[in-house]
Length: 376
Ligand SMILES: Cc1ncc(COP(=O)(O)O)c(C=O)c1O
Image 1: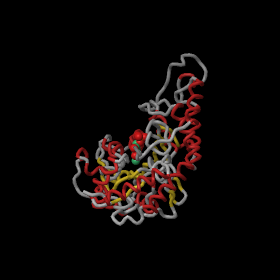
Image 2: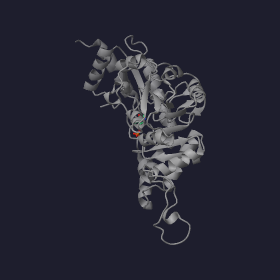
Image 3: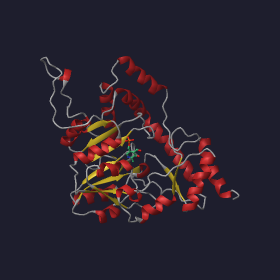
Image 4: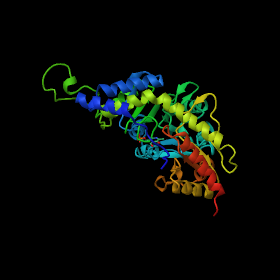
């Protein structure tokens, strides 16, 4: 089976985990702090405003809490978003308001966001689809002039940059994911960045029971080290030294992962360019850098579903990310969003991960071609 996404974990990750075992400290400790510092350097941000988190979904929930989103508030997000983004808004009693995306890039724009803003809008929660950055200048202008917060879900964009700035660091809060299907894999894990240091401090408390690092043996002097104070009613959603040890190794390999993914993206574009019944993703503009998280093809709806089944039956797994949230009954919206509806019915994400070999890529391409030539 050729997987659509796949992690690449090797000897280096295993050796790093062995060291953590040997240290006898597998919880959150110095390895996790080292990962936070290294990831801050990767992004080009100050380490004191970046915190690791158990998973990106928790980061999204934290973001909504940190911004004080509550009942009666509205948060605008692209309908083609991860379901955890919609849940994070709805769980606060607020209303997720879904905006449209461009049919080919699957990214929202300032033009698709603006009509959805109302006096109740407190934030925009963006997704950079497939790791290709949204057009951020206009979106940052819009949210700043409307005096609403901007949150970037950068789960797909660990290496993406817009005019040199890391995705996730252009608004008020950014979140990343290191789950098993991402590019940088830690098993599970994530990161939360806050522009304002006071929000970052609040995040730290919210992620660790409100303890803020002052408890137990870390308290200055005295006995009764089991006593503590809290300054907030937080949950416990931290990374540990096992997952962080894996993440440090993956971070060191990230440039080579991205280089390989870029090669595969280029190969697909070249090898599928003459397939008249397929549309390929828009060219990646010069002013952005992609993480090459997804490669997607588009074709007419019945053919898209037939192609997915044909590939699956021949050992090639594909998918569509992300089923539009305005079509999910629990959110209670029914209105169509034309760009997203078109994209949702025509798009198929085909295998893209850095372990794919050239012959895997050739097999994907020749099977796509064979679909068209099949006898039905
Ligand atoms: C765009 C996006 N955001 C957030 C998440 C949540 O990440 P995690 O699995 O780390 O909670 C995912 C996971 O698939 C995702 O694809």
